[in-house]
Image 1 (tube, rainbow, N blue to C red):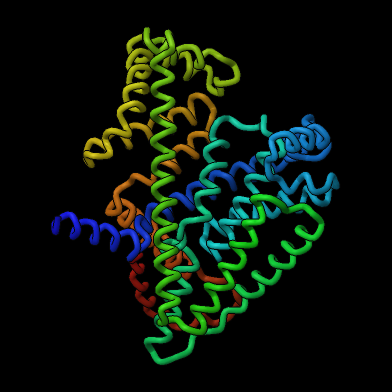
Image 2 (image 1 turned 180 degrees about the horizontal axis):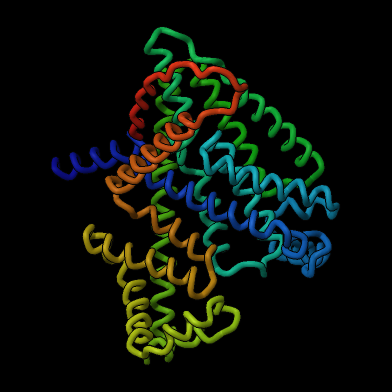
Amino acid sequence: MKRFAARLSRGIALVTGAALGPYQTAAVRIGFAATWLLFLLRELPHRQELYGPDGPWSWDLARQLTADNHAFTVLMWSDSQAWFESVYALAVLSSALLLVGWRTRTMSVLFMVGVLSLQNRSVFMGDGGDNVIHLMAIYLVFTRCGQVWSLDERRARRARAARARGRHPRPDRAGPALWVVLGLALAVATGAGRISGAWLALWGLWAVQALWWYVVRRAPHAEARILLDVVAHLVHNAALLVVMAEACLIYSTAGWYKIQGSRWQDGTAVYYPLHLDYFSPWPALSDLLSAHGVIVLLVTYGTVATQVAFPFTLLNRRVKNVLLAAMMTEHAVIAVVLGLPFFSLAMIAADVVFLPTSFLRRLGGWAARARGRLATSGARIPLPGPRGPRPPAEEPAEAPEASRTV
């Protein structure tokens, strides 16, 4: 009984004492923000046909559909061209800011609003990866995904360094200003009857942000701050568990459905999409792969085996890492051979939640060193100036070592 109580207390301390998986959640944030941002930028010339008020799926048809399924989309608030362009620009901006980790709590909410607004406006636009982005955009709201690899983390680190030197950090003006602007926008939308039902929870997120700012500013070491941290850790860890369960569910259901198909059973299922014009951006490459029956057989059976087995390999770290690498490689091949880059990027972004922390830390170190080299090489490029006698050459200053992400 004592042993059980000790294990239980350690488990409670684990889920309440820290936000687990900071590198994994940061990688998921970067992956999905980058995927959605690249998609929006690529479809920028075609945005009118995809989501515009005068597109093939007209605004009236979208209004009828959302009235039946009660899907949330701010694009149904108005059929004006200016409103559509504003929402699309907001989706692009929130994706870019979430990618770099600026005000991640707020940007994750705006990112979710942008994703849901565009996808629910035209539900027939997508290749499967949009469903993954749709779900993960909601889950990211409840994670503390800006703990590392973000501008928020850098700002907090600089504030701690200033306090350690006995200085007062600069007051935060951008955060309160952003909070006021979004509060006014919520008030206008609610007063106009645009926000109702479950989406009144946006007011709850807005109020929590105000409470968090007030407690951190007025009582950073009081019991109220400790309580907020405990609740935030619990919510983050629960959302992280949901993200992992969602990824396992996607693979397991896909694998078990494939087993029931006759083409997957006889090992020829991969052959057919390679000969569809829609999934053949490189016909010569598709013909080369489908010409070898052994390759088609191995890829077909390997796909099913990997998807079915992956959830069960989470108990063994080495086997899990091998299958994880295999699935990421498979998605990269799908992106090139079948012409589904954003579906593959979305699935890879979901897979990174299972990557080991040591690998992610090493990856962050490589990125920091590469950024340091680029900054050093850029600083050494001479700028053009007026002609005249050149001053004596000086020894170049030694470049500072790239800081490691903690």
